[in-house]
Length: 399
Ligand SMILES: Nc1nc2c(ncn2[C@@H]2O[C@H](COP(=O)(O)OP(=O)(O)OP(=O)(O)O)[C@@H](O)[C@H]2O)c(=O)[nH]1
Ligand SMILES: [Mg+2]
Image (cartoon, rainbow, N blue to C red; front, top):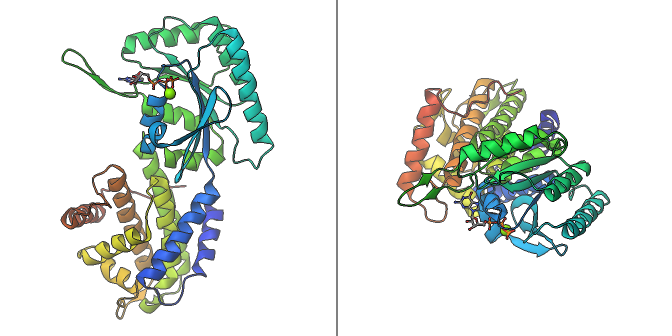
């Protein structure tokens, strides 16, 4: 969504904010804004095909959050294809299960895939398949003719196909196969890209091979998918945190711009809730980007801990006292919120919040088993980084 449209939405949200907020109001509204955000985003839909045992499920678990292949609901849609979904994860994975390719089988699967594509085109657009990952075992010396035909038929559907060389324990073998595919004149010319991935490392007493290639697959995929799939894809994947940060920065930058526009004329501290709508929407978007499922109590907790962690101070205003005024448990006594205060506070809140989301995603902070000291230390770390201007959350330069 263009930033402008996004901002227009944000300013609408402002109208729902009551004059005086408290934690419950904030959490209730936040929950609603969050669920509107995910409804609006739709899902990233991917078809993962390849012969049985090639490593499709392992790849799914490694690229997307929540160990989807195991924890998602897998419902058969046809004889050979099941669809994996999970509540709260904006993704739909069509997985070819136990596929042995002979020409009979290939024909049947292709018919089933074409039916899924046709059905999706006649639906509301949310079902559209955005990308196909075709998996080939990286230690194969060549691609069998029946697979070549299959890949080309998949590409003929018009959906971008990426060839994934899976179980790439040996980088040199993977390179050989890649060269073979790239140099093969006729077949496979229709695939949009190729990359080697070792989704899971391998260690025993003699050998140790580290996982690699996941980021490359994520970035290749981003290049070929349509714009509407970008947000859900960034949210659902966990292989590349830097693109989540970039998205978070985009939302922080948008909110800062809007906060500035709201405060061209300084507003009294008691009118701070004017800014809350902007910030709430920013936080909801960042939560979506990181794919953290927050309960109302979690939101209240995070605000509470921000309030009780002193020392985050900007433009002469303490973030804690500003948040207190938002939550209706105090006032920003005697200050006028001018443009500089509004933008600094919004940026500080955004960066701090994005950092917290990242810590939760990477399991450095835990919402289910809260260690207050750890949370406070973590908030202090990010505020120090913000003060020294060396945080990775840098919304400047966001277009
Ligand atoms: N170490 C390591 N093992 C892998 C990797 N990919 C797959 N494997 C192993 O290979 C076996 C088969 O992998 P799956 O992911 O189940 O293969 P699949 O393509 O989903 O198989 P089907 O569902 O039967 O079509 C499992 O024992 C995996 O642990 C990898 O990247 N690294
Ligand atoms: Mg599988």
